[in-house]
Amino acid sequence: MYDIIIIGAGPAGLTAALYALRANKKILILEAKAYGGQIVAAHKIENYPAIENISGVDFADNLYKQVEKLGAEIKYETVLKINEERSVFTDKNTYQAKAIIIATGAKNRRLGLLEEQKFVGKGLSYCASCDGNFYKDKDVAVIGGGNTALEDALYLANIARKVYLIHRRDVFRGEEAYYKKLKELDNVSFMLNSNCVKIDGDERIESITIKDKDENLSELKIDGLFIAVGQEPSNEIFADVIDVDDKGYIIAHDDVCTSKDKIYVAGDARVKTLRQLTTAVADGSLAAVMAIKEISK
Image (tube, rainbow, N blue to C red; front, side):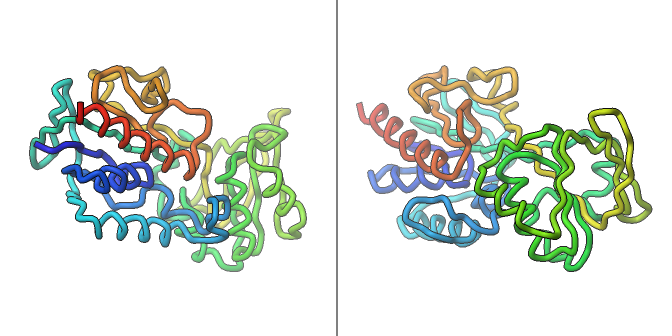
């Protein structure tokens, strides 16, 4: 029996663990892949209070070491389901907890093109900071209109010969500061009101087909394609126990409380207005405090 089982070892989950461990609670962190979550793909973090500049990898490492030093128990197992009695079933074991915190985050959304999966790792990537260095002095395209797309374009502009930024609308959702920086760069071109409708190539991506608002088609010769069109949750395994919305995000009240007693949610997995590092760690700390309060009654 654990006091708290935390599902997910991203910033939200690790922050929850930090608070729970400092309260002397027996916890278990379950992670399917690697600690850190999506933040490890961030080349630079420049909007976290009191930290002017840090890489996503360094941030995740620092947080992980902090939790590890407090004696965190971390197991790399895939959670298959939970139940209302707060049992957690993985691909290897079954665990029981007084409280559960779900911090599974979200995953990169696909464009949905038939050729998309074929070219993953062959010119197509969802992580510019991971794969950008493969495209030194080459031509690349970034698809998206949020902060991630703008940050990816800025990062790639320092490496690639040419960067095309493709967005389906005429304005970007991302921060104006990023957009202003991009407009000053000679090797960045904007393709607004446009969609990628086809990916072509033999062994690797060679070109993409773009459709503009007037239905005109044009071919763009590129070496690499980076997709940054948002995220989607991985909450299917929880949907029969707790309430989720029509997009699959966990519905929370009081910020982190789910529809079931002593089951909480933190970070990008829940319905929220802003999905950022700051809100993830805020959720993690609040979920831990709420869980500690309830199981201590």
